[in-house]
Image 1 (cartoon, rainbow, N blue to C red):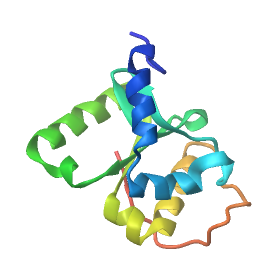
Image 2 (image 1 turned 45 degrees about the vertical axis):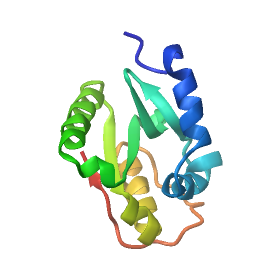
Image 3 (image 1 turned 90 degrees about the vertical axis):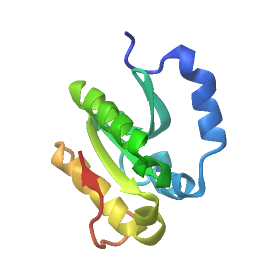
Length: 138
């Protein structure tokens, strides 16, 4: 199985990029164009899944969980999905919509911390000030 950028998922990825929800747009506006010193992709396919954001240089997947992620079937699906991603040596960090809406700085700090834990130096050009750390590394 091809792991990255499956062509059979291209139309779905393109549509997901076009109709990103407000929370994904809010975070993407801080991740795009190396603003944090790291390159990210959005709506990136990995195996049979499409992840919200992906930093290829540090094998970091960032997921934003809305209310539907807490329904019984969705919880099991997310666990299987995370297990698959981890089995391919990828780190997964999850945030809720609430985290991004109400503590964006903490979300950014958690992402930078996770990137630095994976061997990267924390960028000195971060435009955001430090705040409370949120998020759950899985």
